[in-house]
Length: 277
Image (tube, rainbow, N blue to C red; front, top):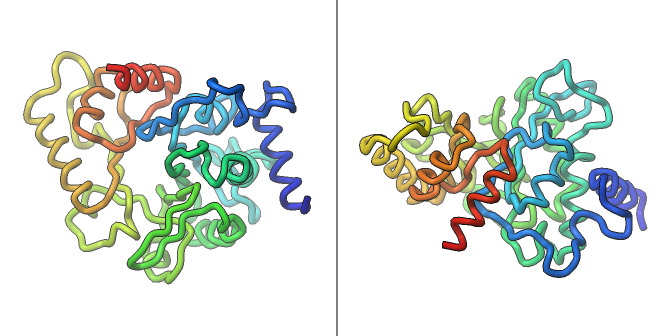
Protein backbone atom coordinates (compact mmCIF):
# COMPACT_ATOMS: atom_id res chain seq x y z
CA UNK A 1 0.00 0.00 0.00
CA UNK A 2 1.35 3.44 -0.90
CA UNK A 3 2.06 6.07 1.75
CA UNK A 4 -0.87 8.17 0.49
CA UNK A 5 -3.27 5.22 0.71
CA UNK A 6 -1.99 4.33 4.16
CA UNK A 7 -2.58 7.89 5.37
CA UNK A 8 -6.05 7.87 3.85
CA UNK A 9 -6.97 4.61 5.56
CA UNK A 10 -5.67 5.84 8.92
CA UNK A 11 -7.74 9.03 8.59
CA UNK A 12 -10.76 6.91 7.74
CA UNK A 13 -10.33 4.67 10.80
CA UNK A 14 -9.65 7.60 13.12
CA UNK A 15 -12.76 9.39 11.86
CA UNK A 16 -14.81 6.29 12.55
CA UNK A 17 -14.01 6.46 16.27
CA UNK A 18 -16.48 4.42 18.24
CA UNK A 19 -16.37 1.51 15.79
CA UNK A 20 -14.09 -1.48 16.04
CA UNK A 21 -11.19 -1.61 13.61
CA UNK A 22 -12.65 -4.82 12.19
CA UNK A 23 -15.88 -3.01 11.36
CA UNK A 24 -15.33 0.57 10.17
CA UNK A 25 -18.32 2.86 9.68
CA UNK A 26 -18.90 2.03 6.04
CA UNK A 27 -18.76 -1.73 6.49
CA UNK A 28 -21.88 -2.25 8.58
CA UNK A 29 -23.40 -5.73 9.00
CA UNK A 30 -25.55 -6.85 6.11
CA UNK A 31 -28.96 -5.21 6.29
CA UNK A 32 -27.67 -2.43 8.55
CA UNK A 33 -26.33 -0.06 5.91
CA UNK A 34 -28.29 3.22 5.95
CA UNK A 35 -30.60 4.10 3.11
CA UNK A 36 -28.98 6.90 1.06
CA UNK A 37 -31.15 10.01 1.39
CA UNK A 38 -30.53 12.17 -1.68
CA UNK A 39 -32.19 15.25 -0.20
CA UNK A 40 -30.39 15.18 3.16
CA UNK A 41 -27.78 17.92 3.60
CA UNK A 42 -25.76 18.24 6.83
CA UNK A 43 -25.36 21.95 7.51
CA UNK A 44 -22.08 22.77 9.30
CA UNK A 45 -21.38 19.05 9.41
CA UNK A 46 -18.01 19.50 11.13
CA UNK A 47 -19.73 20.64 14.33
CA UNK A 48 -21.09 17.15 15.00
CA UNK A 49 -19.31 14.76 17.36
CA UNK A 50 -17.89 12.76 14.44
CA UNK A 51 -17.70 14.96 11.34
CA UNK A 52 -18.81 13.19 8.17
CA UNK A 53 -19.33 9.81 9.88
CA UNK A 54 -22.46 10.86 11.79
CA UNK A 55 -23.93 12.10 8.50
CA UNK A 56 -22.94 8.94 6.64
CA UNK A 57 -24.52 6.71 9.25
CA UNK A 58 -27.74 8.71 8.85
CA UNK A 59 -27.69 8.24 5.06
CA UNK A 60 -26.92 11.87 4.21
CA UNK A 61 -25.74 12.43 0.65
CA UNK A 62 -24.48 15.99 1.14
CA UNK A 63 -22.36 17.65 3.83
CA UNK A 64 -21.02 21.16 4.38
CA UNK A 65 -17.53 22.03 5.59
CA UNK A 66 -16.28 25.56 6.32
CA UNK A 67 -12.60 26.07 5.56
CA UNK A 68 -9.89 28.59 6.41
CA UNK A 69 -6.53 28.85 4.70
CA UNK A 70 -4.00 28.96 7.54
CA UNK A 71 -0.28 28.81 6.77
CA UNK A 72 -0.94 26.98 3.56
CA UNK A 73 -3.32 24.42 5.08
CA UNK A 74 -7.08 24.09 4.61
CA UNK A 75 -8.48 23.86 8.13
CA UNK A 76 -12.11 23.09 8.92
CA UNK A 77 -13.87 25.36 11.44
CA UNK A 78 -16.67 27.89 11.64
CA UNK A 79 -14.49 30.68 13.04
CA UNK A 80 -10.81 31.42 12.55
CA UNK A 81 -10.25 31.19 16.31
CA UNK A 82 -11.51 27.59 16.32
CA UNK A 83 -9.08 26.07 13.80
CA UNK A 84 -6.97 23.08 14.85
CA UNK A 85 -4.00 21.86 12.88
CA UNK A 86 -5.18 18.25 12.63
CA UNK A 87 -8.67 19.14 11.35
CA UNK A 88 -7.79 19.55 7.68
CA UNK A 89 -10.22 19.19 4.81
CA UNK A 90 -8.23 16.17 3.68
CA UNK A 91 -8.30 14.36 7.03
CA UNK A 92 -11.93 15.05 7.90
CA UNK A 93 -13.51 14.67 4.46
CA UNK A 94 -11.46 13.95 1.35
CA UNK A 95 -9.45 10.99 2.65
CA UNK A 96 -12.35 9.09 4.25
CA UNK A 97 -14.65 9.78 1.30
CA UNK A 98 -12.06 8.41 -1.13
CA UNK A 99 -11.52 5.35 1.05
CA UNK A 100 -15.26 4.66 1.17
CA UNK A 101 -15.53 5.02 -2.59
CA UNK A 102 -12.71 2.52 -3.07
CA UNK A 103 -14.36 0.05 -0.70
CA UNK A 104 -17.85 0.52 -2.17
CA UNK A 105 -17.15 0.03 -5.86
CA UNK A 106 -16.61 3.66 -6.76
CA UNK A 107 -19.42 5.24 -4.74
CA UNK A 108 -19.65 6.63 -1.22
CA UNK A 109 -22.73 4.45 -0.75
CA UNK A 110 -22.59 1.13 -2.58
CA UNK A 111 -24.70 1.57 -5.74
CA UNK A 112 -25.70 4.97 -4.36
CA UNK A 113 -25.89 8.47 -5.85
CA UNK A 114 -23.13 11.05 -6.06
CA UNK A 115 -22.10 12.57 -2.74
CA UNK A 116 -21.93 16.37 -2.47
CA UNK A 117 -19.17 18.04 -0.47
CA UNK A 118 -20.13 21.70 -0.13
CA UNK A 119 -16.99 23.64 0.78
CA UNK A 120 -17.80 27.00 2.36
CA UNK A 121 -14.73 29.23 2.01
CA UNK A 122 -14.30 31.58 4.96
CA UNK A 123 -10.88 33.06 4.20
CA UNK A 124 -9.69 35.04 1.17
CA UNK A 125 -11.46 33.77 -1.96
CA UNK A 126 -8.52 33.84 -4.37
CA UNK A 127 -5.79 32.48 -2.12
CA UNK A 128 -8.02 29.81 -0.62
CA UNK A 129 -9.31 28.57 -3.95
CA UNK A 130 -5.76 28.40 -5.33
CA UNK A 131 -4.76 26.15 -2.43
CA UNK A 132 -7.98 24.14 -2.66
CA UNK A 133 -7.55 23.59 -6.39
CA UNK A 134 -4.13 22.05 -5.81
CA UNK A 135 -5.49 19.78 -3.10
CA UNK A 136 -8.46 18.62 -5.17
CA UNK A 137 -6.20 17.55 -8.04
CA UNK A 138 -4.77 14.91 -5.69
CA UNK A 139 -8.25 13.36 -5.41
CA UNK A 140 -9.08 13.41 -9.11
CA UNK A 141 -9.76 9.67 -9.06
CA UNK A 142 -12.97 10.15 -7.06
CA UNK A 143 -14.06 13.72 -7.89
CA UNK A 144 -16.60 14.92 -10.43
CA UNK A 145 -14.92 16.78 -13.29
CA UNK A 146 -16.45 19.96 -14.69
CA UNK A 147 -15.77 21.48 -18.09
CA UNK A 148 -17.48 24.37 -19.84
CA UNK A 149 -19.99 22.14 -21.61
CA UNK A 150 -19.91 18.87 -19.67
CA UNK A 151 -19.93 17.26 -16.25
CA UNK A 152 -18.39 13.83 -15.62
CA UNK A 153 -20.01 12.69 -12.39
CA UNK A 154 -17.91 10.69 -9.96
CA UNK A 155 -18.22 9.49 -6.36
CA UNK A 156 -17.82 12.98 -4.82
CA UNK A 157 -18.99 16.30 -6.24
CA UNK A 158 -17.28 19.35 -4.70
CA UNK A 159 -19.16 22.66 -4.81
CA UNK A 160 -17.62 25.93 -3.59
CA UNK A 161 -19.73 28.29 -1.50
CA UNK A 162 -19.00 31.29 0.70
CA UNK A 163 -16.10 33.41 -0.56
CA UNK A 164 -15.98 32.23 -4.18
CA UNK A 165 -13.32 33.13 -6.73
CA UNK A 166 -15.91 33.22 -9.47
CA UNK A 167 -13.86 34.81 -12.24
CA UNK A 168 -10.96 32.38 -11.90
CA UNK A 169 -13.24 29.35 -11.76
CA UNK A 170 -15.24 30.53 -14.76
CA UNK A 171 -12.10 30.67 -16.91
CA UNK A 172 -10.77 27.22 -16.05
CA UNK A 173 -11.01 24.61 -18.81
CA UNK A 174 -11.09 21.74 -16.31
CA UNK A 175 -12.26 22.00 -12.72
CA UNK A 176 -12.65 19.57 -9.83
CA UNK A 177 -15.23 21.84 -8.22
CA UNK A 178 -18.25 23.85 -9.29
CA UNK A 179 -19.75 27.09 -7.97
CA UNK A 180 -22.65 27.41 -5.55
CA UNK A 181 -24.82 30.12 -7.10
CA UNK A 182 -27.44 32.47 -5.71
CA UNK A 183 -30.99 33.16 -6.85
CA UNK A 184 -29.87 35.95 -9.17
CA UNK A 185 -27.94 33.35 -11.13
CA UNK A 186 -31.28 31.90 -12.24
CA UNK A 187 -31.61 35.02 -14.39
CA UNK A 188 -28.11 34.76 -15.85
CA UNK A 189 -26.72 32.74 -18.73
CA UNK A 190 -24.34 30.81 -16.47
CA UNK A 191 -24.03 27.16 -17.43
CA UNK A 192 -25.31 24.45 -15.10
CA UNK A 193 -21.87 22.83 -15.55
CA UNK A 194 -20.45 25.90 -13.80
CA UNK A 195 -23.32 26.49 -11.33
CA UNK A 196 -25.09 23.16 -10.71
CA UNK A 197 -26.51 24.35 -7.37
CA UNK A 198 -28.11 27.60 -6.20
CA UNK A 199 -28.44 28.35 -2.50
CA UNK A 200 -30.18 31.15 -0.68
CA UNK A 201 -31.11 32.23 2.84
CA UNK A 202 -34.64 31.13 3.68
CA UNK A 203 -35.15 34.14 5.95
CA UNK A 204 -34.22 36.57 3.18
CA UNK A 205 -36.91 35.25 0.85
CA UNK A 206 -39.67 33.89 3.09
CA UNK A 207 -41.38 35.10 6.26
CA UNK A 208 -42.93 31.76 7.25
CA UNK A 209 -41.01 29.94 10.00
CA UNK A 210 -43.16 26.82 10.38
CA UNK A 211 -45.95 28.07 12.67
CA UNK A 212 -49.36 27.40 11.13
CA UNK A 213 -49.90 26.77 7.43
CA UNK A 214 -47.43 28.20 4.95
CA UNK A 215 -49.07 31.18 3.18
CA UNK A 216 -50.26 30.30 -0.32
CA UNK A 217 -48.30 33.13 -1.94
CA UNK A 218 -45.09 31.87 -0.32
CA UNK A 219 -45.85 28.31 -1.38
CA UNK A 220 -46.25 29.54 -4.93
CA UNK A 221 -43.02 31.55 -4.79
CA UNK A 222 -41.14 28.50 -3.49
CA UNK A 223 -42.55 26.29 -6.22
CA UNK A 224 -41.66 28.84 -8.89
CA UNK A 225 -38.05 29.04 -7.71
CA UNK A 226 -37.69 25.26 -7.62
CA UNK A 227 -39.24 24.85 -11.06
CA UNK A 228 -37.03 27.58 -12.53
CA UNK A 229 -33.82 26.13 -11.08
CA UNK A 230 -34.54 22.57 -12.11
CA UNK A 231 -35.58 23.62 -15.62
CA UNK A 232 -32.03 24.97 -15.95
CA UNK A 233 -30.52 21.69 -14.76
CA UNK A 234 -29.63 23.04 -11.33
CA UNK A 235 -30.33 21.87 -7.79
CA UNK A 236 -31.67 24.30 -5.21
CA UNK A 237 -31.07 24.63 -1.46
CA UNK A 238 -32.09 27.06 1.28
CA UNK A 239 -30.03 27.70 4.39
CA UNK A 240 -31.25 29.17 7.71
CA UNK A 241 -34.29 26.91 7.64
CA UNK A 242 -35.64 25.89 11.07
CA UNK A 243 -35.10 22.20 11.88
CA UNK A 244 -38.81 21.40 11.88
CA UNK A 245 -40.83 18.72 10.06
CA UNK A 246 -43.28 21.43 8.99
CA UNK A 247 -40.51 23.25 7.11
CA UNK A 248 -39.01 20.07 5.65
CA UNK A 249 -42.45 18.96 4.45
CA UNK A 250 -43.02 22.14 2.46
CA UNK A 251 -39.50 21.94 0.99
CA UNK A 252 -39.92 18.28 0.08
CA UNK A 253 -43.38 18.80 -1.43
CA UNK A 254 -42.05 21.67 -3.55
CA UNK A 255 -39.22 19.46 -4.82
CA UNK A 256 -36.29 21.27 -3.16
CA UNK A 257 -33.23 19.16 -3.90
CA UNK A 258 -31.28 19.55 -0.65
CA UNK A 259 -32.96 19.92 2.74
CA UNK A 260 -30.70 21.75 5.21
CA UNK A 261 -30.44 20.27 8.70
CA UNK A 262 -28.37 20.45 11.86
CA UNK A 263 -30.63 17.79 13.41
CA UNK A 264 -29.37 14.75 11.47
CA UNK A 265 -31.53 12.20 13.26
CA UNK A 266 -34.62 14.36 12.91
CA UNK A 267 -34.27 14.82 9.16
CA UNK A 268 -33.43 11.14 8.71
CA UNK A 269 -36.62 10.12 10.55
CA UNK A 270 -38.66 12.58 8.51
CA UNK A 271 -37.36 11.41 5.15
CA UNK A 272 -37.57 7.70 5.97
CA UNK A 273 -41.13 8.19 7.22
CA UNK A 274 -41.97 10.08 4.04
CA UNK A 275 -40.57 7.27 1.91
CA UNK A 276 -42.70 4.69 3.68
CA UNK A 277 -45.96 6.54 2.99
